[in-house]
Length: 141
Image (cartoon, rainbow, N blue to C red; front, side, top):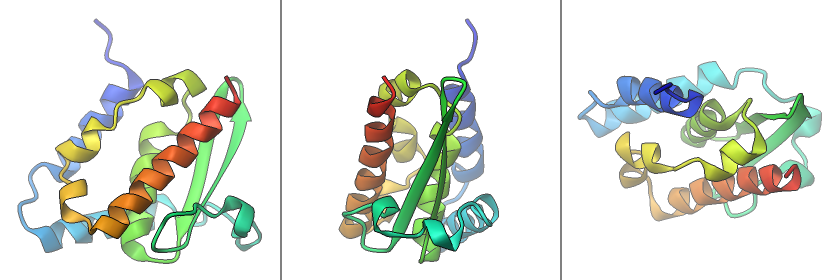
């Protein structure tokens, strides 16, 4: 059976995060992931209210393009931890078909221990980002 692109991406994230026991080290890796993955992804001009994800404690902006039947997501945040969360979601779900995004499990987020290390407000923001990405995918179905 062929491994799906989602499974491959989830495995890559698991390889990065599964060995980390220390909460502070987990945050450092998350911060580095965001800093490297989202560097110059969206322009300052795209950081406006229409692209802002509501429900996040921090400022989060998500944009996208749709080409050849796939959605590419781009994002940023004004805080380093949230930037890492945005980067993980974009890594997982960017350049996929809308149906793949809608059917994608969020189980990997729990497997890498992300939710349990976030405050309730950041978990709410994570859910708001997931909802926004799925709303975009629904638009193209």
